[in-house]
Length: 231
Ligand SMILES: C[S@@+](CC[C@H](N)C(=O)[O-])C[C@H]1O[C@@H](n2cnc3c(N)ncnc32)[C@H](O)[C@@H]1O
Image (cartoon, rainbow, N blue to C red):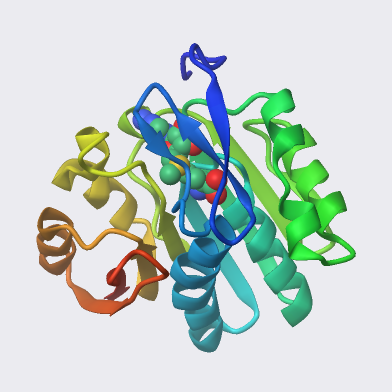
């Protein structure tokens, strides 16, 4: 079990697209790009990851996320799944859950301007840890409070993985071949691994695991981001 609650507070920041993010003092990094939290999440995880996997897998998508954090990726993914009327199972791990008062300060429901955004965001954060929970018909969430280092290798059932760790310069232990392999083994054939990082070690590891590597244009402030597809 992870060592919770947070020992150090996060600071609230406003990113350039007007959406909030947090700055984490334990690791000295922000949860999202300061150039736009929602913009980054929409491009790196929703467009490159979820929307691409929908084209291949159509009706049932299993997502795995490293780092639940603010729940922004989860919120955007659930909205997209509801829009497409598909079955979604969203599994996310988190070692250091944010506090309720931090959740209350995040402005995602107001920025996303969707009639269900507030309800989904509240349900996501109020749903219990370590128990699979049905948020809506067809939409299941499992938030696991565990460190990646302590998590066993995943079973091969995921169509898309959002690898959303703090940067390699701040938390190198999240980007080792051992950690990437643990997660990549959980991806089915034609499944997708997406992240904002294009670091060399990551690309070599994924290539060795038989993934096709693509560098795609990044959001503001980032030239390229990574999409890797299991062959
Ligand atoms: C870049 S932030 C993730 C942002 C998140 N996906 C969101 O939408 O807000 C990285 C996350 O990884 C979590 N984390 C840090 N070390 C971890 C570990 N060893 N195992 C699992 N999660 C960890 C952090 O607490 C943080 O929530």
